[in-house]
Length: 392
Ligand SMILES: *[C@@H]1O[C@H](CO)[C@@H](O)[C@H](O)[C@H]1NC(C)=O
Ligand SMILES: *[C@@H]1O[C@H](CO)[C@@H](O)[C@H](O)[C@H]1NC(C)=O
Image (cartoon, rainbow, N blue to C red; front, side, top):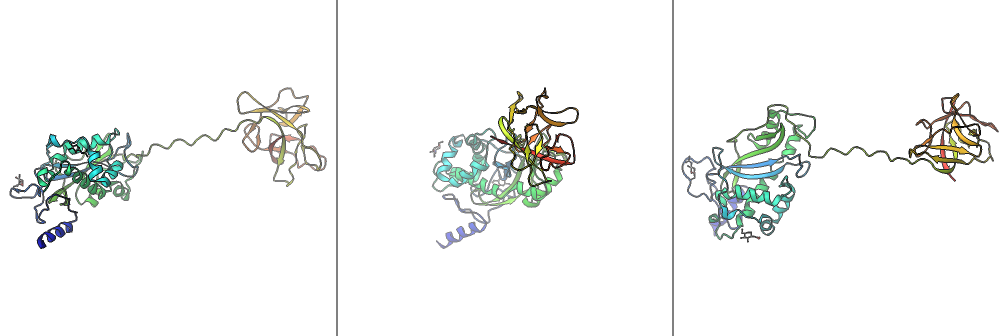
């Protein structure tokens, strides 16, 4: 009883929880790929796949996973020389990883659904592939390593260990701390990326590119004890090196390009009857336009009723009063309504003010006083004003 307690405590002390049902391993198990003689118990010693890779993706086209995180690729047992075995047990190439994890490791499954993403959108098949190809080659996960093995029991251990390792490797955060952030235009050097990552991992990382775009990272470990509850130690890479060029590496954003700002809401042209009131910084009392088109500010007078008729372009309109059509005269840019006007000018409305030639400012020589009927111009004069429309 006493010695078993000690063993459990020692196992926790190396930073791992006991995987239910798997054999507990002696704390002084040799480090994988570092034994000088054969180790018989491959339930406590990962062999031949003693070089464990935690691999991550940065998928931008199509995008997978959160914008600010790498995603999981797999947990791979490479041999100590970088070669590897694959598909080691056809009988354990399970086709129901989701169901298995729902029962045995629901929290792991939930995390995987966010961070272990297939670029084609078929996560289950991706997970089946990873476990069937790589998981079945991990010696410490073999059924014989479990005291009272229940079929599929090792699946939760594989995926939970992969998730635990992944959570401790926040690549996006590590890169951004070093100023390496996703960008459509910036480029980075392999040296800078390597420096940022290996400073955190403790050993060089295999950095892979596709079309000079940063795409995959391989973090490597050796293990003391089992994958289930052993101690992982960062290891120098073995096997193939980084596939990125030395310079000009892109780290593309996962966020899709922002859609262009929506067009300002098109303001429909004025239509029907209304009054034209004037606002000017020259006086509190702006007054209004009368039927001749003149500006009038005298108390007690009645604003004219203007009629706006939309044009066929869906944006402009013409104006008329009881006196006749309104136009900005060609000769002096004065605004006049009357029987003498043969061709009406087109005006616009910006949602607040009437516009002529896309400008919302009109002018007069002076502020009209008493019974002045101020001539309104579309070209610059001493006094400026804006004209608003009130439908009647
Ligand atoms: C390490 O142990 C494994 C598994 O027993 C064995 O295959 C391998 O040859 C050993 N390595 C050395 C250098 O003895
Ligand atoms: C998953 O499939 C295996 C057979 O490949 C079976 O033994 C196991 O019961 C299934 N598990 C679940 C949860 O469906």
